[in-house]
Image 1: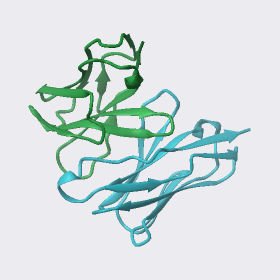
Image 2: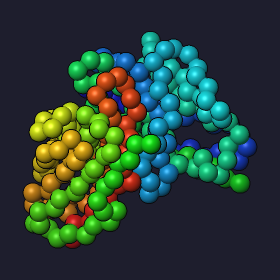
Image 3: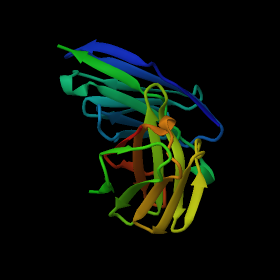
Image 4: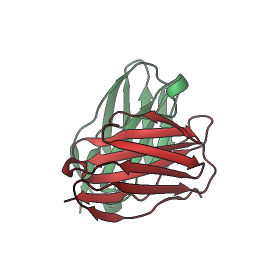
Length: 112
Length: 113
């Protein structure tokens, strides 16, 4: 099974930097997905980390530490449109690789 | 771009009714999924299918069944709807190989009265 923990809510100011953490315990691990979900909309893919370290993609970066069971999503130069829920999802290794378990999501509110 | 289409955005049904939620994807993906999403509980997997006529239970299959008669279509069935099945239902698909991101439909907000 999998145990995933991320903060329920976070608030930040426009233009700031925010880090959303995700810790997980899973039997068999290949990598970790991050998704963004705006209210009333479908989740959309942000990143997939397999190797340890930081991967940067524009204003968004994602970090993974496999040994610590820890990941974070870093959002820079926050914009109002970044207000959304951010979901982390560890991907299992092997036969159930297609089956993801999602965290409950972190609701980020960006204030002007 | 992958298109995952769910038949209804909003649906209202009555307790005891048999309810069908339809999902169609246009990218020939082998794998399709049904989730429900509730406040504070996140996305929970109900069923998934890795091929035509193949299905596997997810974390919360009770009260639901599924049908995959054609590769592009995956149906979720509430055999006898109950009020605790009021939720947002999301369909997703991915190709068969590798660790691809799931592509989601826009969701169906189902209310059972």
